Length: 239
Ligand code: NDP
Image (cartoon, rainbow, N blue to C red; front, side, top):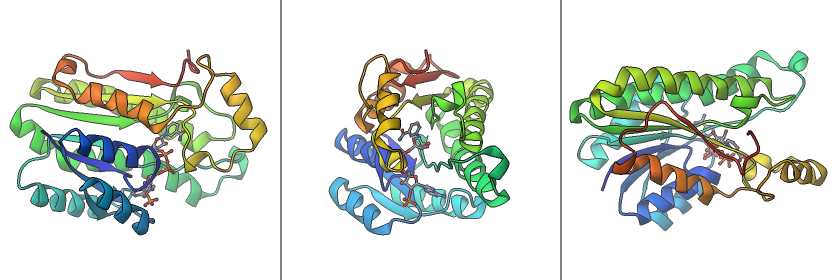
């Protein structure tokens, strides 16, 4: 049983991670920001602790990590940096606010949570940090320049942290999902969805449970010698 902190647990992939890892017997706390009703629902269903926190705000993240640690009554064993936002549009049109919101949420948020929680894992001499990237961080997505840059940044963060924290037996890995059926993709029209499925060798849309399977693997004792890796959970899209 591990004490696990997950960002972005109110909806989509994060909600599936919260529920799945609670069902596995772990003690789970999760961060959410805008959707308190959804967060309460996930908490009631899973028994996890919801904490309202904007991951792009370093002071808020520091406070939230302290709350999680206190509620666990012990050190954090693993974090999953999952909170993310997307922005679709031409690069020439992106506003400063939109650029900063995507970078600060997807990339800086992961760094803030890692900075605040890593001391627990270093002190224990073991731990797991899992970043949820995206296949677009590997291949680049047209009209998603901030999103692609933020997710490519997570690759660098993962590799650098793996080297820095390896001597403390803290592994750091990145999961790069492909097209997963969540609200993040709700604005895509039918033609775009069909084309994404067509470009996916496995020939279907992914589900949050596909991502949960990879998370379970990186959390396991058996994965203790695997660090600094980016694992595509994308049905072969980015191969
Ligand atoms: P959703 O839009 O369904 O959920 C996003 C989650 O992130 C919500 O729980 C949301 O909380 C939280 N969140 C957003 N901004 C903040 C913030 N500033 N502070 C705290 N929490 C925040 O997205 P998905 O579940 O689809 O995506 C989860 C992760 O997976 C993201 O990092 C995404 O980039 C990545 N991913 C998703 C893919 C897909 O196809 N769906 C593909 C590749 C990667 P709230 O609603 O309460 O604000």
